[in-house]
Length: 106
Image 1 (tube, rainbow, N blue to C red):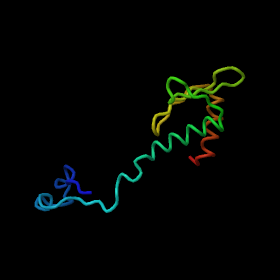
Image 2 (cartoon, rainbow, N blue to C red; image 1 turned 180 degrees about the vertical axis):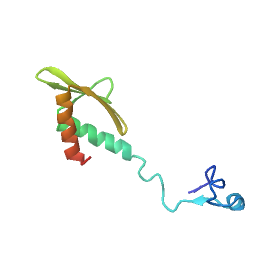
Image 3 (cartoon, helix red, strand yellow; image 1 turned 30 degrees about the vertical axis):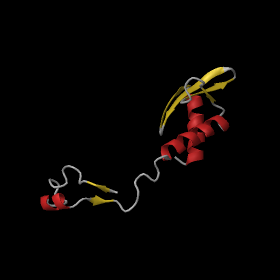
């Protein structure tokens, strides 16, 4: 794969203007090899939340998950690619974060 030099490369003095005009950048490896990494993470994380943390996936929007304890809604989570947003009781969120840190070592 070949691409043009990024803007500002001459101004930052990484290459000369002449080099920029007569050369380009060649990637030695494909940069798209892990194009589905974010999707794999989302699927793995969602599966973990549903199987191990007893979350329920919303039927109308599969990116929204709920957790009920003793018949009460404790956590609502939105997952989009590799980002998430959580809302819930402090105690429930602390327990969830501890489980996630242990599982994924983060």
